[in-house]
Length: 91
Image (cartoon, rainbow, N blue to C red; front, side, top):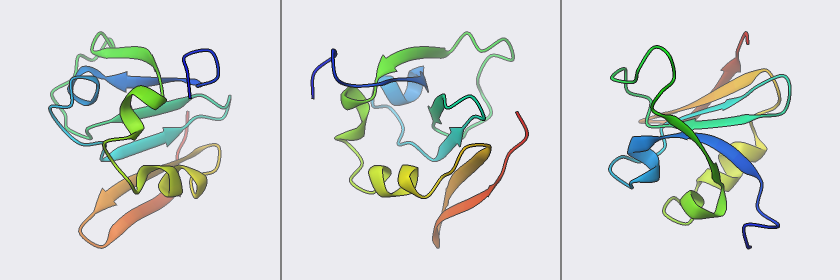
């Protein structure tokens, strides 16, 4: 995949820098994806979230593609010790 064919997602700086794995996937009702480390040390204004082409971050986590496929719009998936837990999400 190249930047021209890879969709944009919002990701936290921790994920973009490969400092932390993706532990929270949010699929918004408008189709936008948000991939974060799931921690609570992000700016409330979203300043630590940036658009990035998904191919830059998915290669580090082999189960991410399957988790995203199982996360419909208006839902989120959280990585737990048992695996990815999918639940409804209000935008």
